Image (cartoon, rainbow, N blue to C red; front, side, top):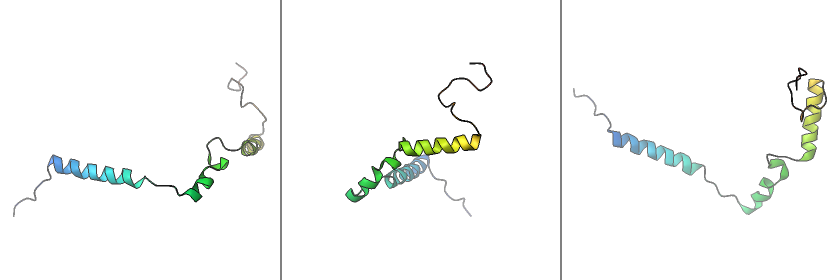
Length: 80
């Protein structure tokens, strides 16, 4: 019984290129006009809304038991 043929390097590269092309093509999407309003919402941005930042800051203060210290240098050991 003969051994099965091994794939050549070009066949493997073609297969890999095809898989990569399919992966990149699947990431392309067109946004419909009525969906753009939702995606442009300030809550969808990385910066977020200021009221969300203040709420997250308040939650951190409550959880950590301290207030402030977000804009100061130093590690909390007293050596600035």
